[in-house]
Image 1 (cartoon, helix red, strand yellow):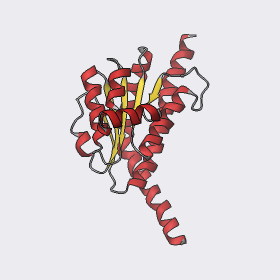
Image 2 (cartoon, rainbow, N blue to C red):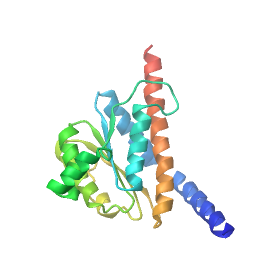
Image 3 (tube, helix red, strand yellow):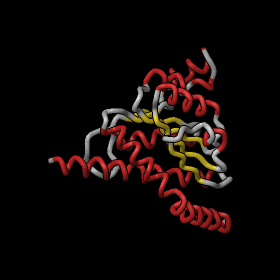
Image 4 (cartoon, rainbow, N blue to C red):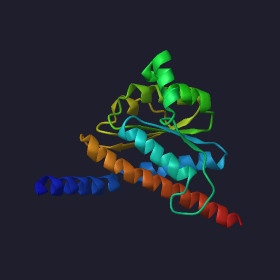
Length: 198
């Protein structure tokens, strides 16, 4: 029993160290993209399935609420939370459209989408990214493994944050750290900018 627990901690620790080196540049770029979108009066949408749905909600709740620094709410919406809407779209259209239809309804040019898929192959996330591109939104893709189909759907100004590991659990654990880095970076940029103006 203890062996697999220690092994899991060691596996996560090793992946975190590797990811810190590999992901610092795309995370920094994503922070800059999100910050610019918010500074221009736009918003951030986020979506994912299963554990990635929880990650999307985690991210937007930190922005709308508070991460570590006191500030006003930042406009961010998780597209994973309205069960009536999700089931209506899945029933009346198809499950592939549950996020894309919300992107079309809520998204505007200049907004940003955080799309989360550990495999990079989720059909409803692919549809959401395509909808975002149609509207002129930027996309930050948080994924794993080899990046999947989604990594090939990105536009030049989009950002890929890929945790290159085959295990979903380990990918999701690093995704949580990435989300905290995004939140801290956005806070640092916006709170520091606001303080310098005052």
